[in-house]
Amino acid sequence: MGFLHMVAISNPEMARQVLQVQDNIFSNRPATIAISYLTYDRADMAFAHYGPFWRQMRKLSVMKLFSRKRAESWESIRDEVDSLVKAVAANTGKAINMGEFIFNLTKNSIYRAAFGSISQEGQDEFIRILQEFSKLFGAFNIADFIPWLGWADPQGLNTRLENARCALDKFIDTIIDDHIEKKKRNGDGPDDGDTDMVDDLLTFYSEDAKVNESEDLQNSIKLTKDNIKAIIMDVMFGGTETVASAIEWALSELMRNPEEMKRVQQELAEVVGLDRRVEESDFDKLTYLKCTLKETLRLHPPIPLLLHETAEDAVVAGYQIPAKSRVMINTWAIGRDRNSWEDPDSFKPSRFLREGVPDFKGSNFEFIPFGSGRRSCPGMQLGLYALDMAVAHLLHCFTWELPDGMKPSELDMSDIFGLTAPRANRLYAVPKKRLVCPLF
Ligand code: HEM
Image 1: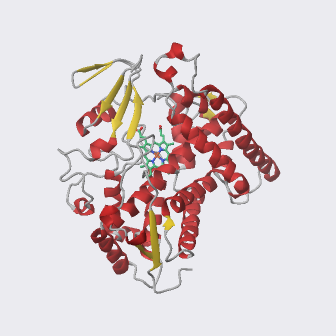
Image 2 (image 1 turned 30 degrees about the vertical axis):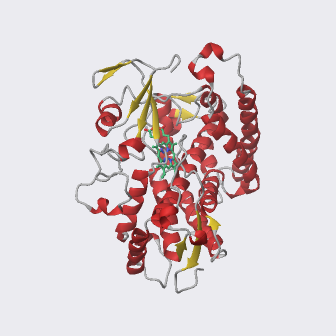
Image 3 (image 1 turned 60 degrees about the vertical axis):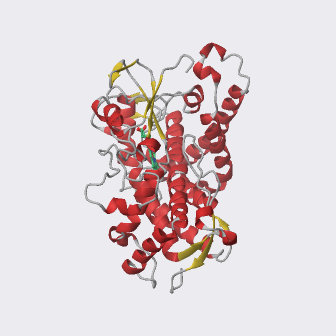
């Protein structure tokens, strides 16, 4: 396309070739002009090329930001699921915009995990900035394909990019400064127990960036404010729309397939009982619910195209792929591959009960909603926790009907194909209380 080489990967064996067999060549990220500018020239992890900086950023994220030990992130999800149940309970009998309720859940949990509770008041402004970033990430810019046409900028993208980054600078600089102040006040003494991701990142803060391959993380990486801003944006982008779309699709598929809904709710009634709310300790026993969530991720992977770039020339299946080619791994097509899945377009959670069925941990290339290998999703555990928690509560606490006597088969299931693949139209549904005990 223009001056760019683009390669599409649409079946499991080819995905294995690029994500496993030759992953050392295929683990760079392509970045458009907008992405480079908005990530402070790839100062983050998601768009950094594979190399020492990315490796240390990834280590830092896995150990500090997404680790199960960061109990605050998990706690914020539990609290926000509680708020969601309360909000739904206040609207029983009415048709509610579930898409919006669900988006608020993931947005609030990630916002709190990232910034803590000290910065709640700026949320609306931040969401506005995020939405503009998202539009700019997705905007078609002719200069990405034909660089010398960049001067023309017919859509005025350059001004929008500058304004968006300025707005983010203003917003996050204040938050970072508040956190630095808080740290100074607390000195080396014990903190107030409410450490968020900005606090964790600030322990690596320095005016000058530094990275080396030392094993000791604290000595191997120093982050500037730009790094901190860019990685916070990774978390916001990586964790909000992805999880929200998976929850909304799960609920939509179950409403379109009432027999499946009955089976999941039956399991909840048997394992948990209708006289109490579902708890984390129940999850392991909710086998059919887990199958339902897997089937949702197979049909609706939240990131439909994995975007990679080649670091050097390569050959795959006899095709010559030059260095710096853009490689799109189509997880959406792979999840529906006729040679790997029986009746691939139908929603059948029971297929995941069978022995030897592919799992999404990354080594079965028929099913890679979280990617596989070096660039695979570092937030998978957190994302799955939010997905389990939200769907289990929504199905256990409430029964669901479509509004205005709509039949399940009439529910529109079209999606929007962009960086993520959410429903084209928000899901509206009518909840009724299901439990025999009080919800709170
Ligand atoms: C259902 C939920 C989620 C799904 C399906 C998902 C899926 C993915 C996929 C497919 C990738 C790209 C893999 C590749 O390019 O090969 C990715 C990367 C990433 N995800 Fe997730 N994700 C989810 C939740 C989360 C959450 C909750 C966070 C953070 C809080 C997160 C943070 C990231 C980051 C930072 C990357 C970039 C990693 C890198 O480039 O090294 N994701 N995710």
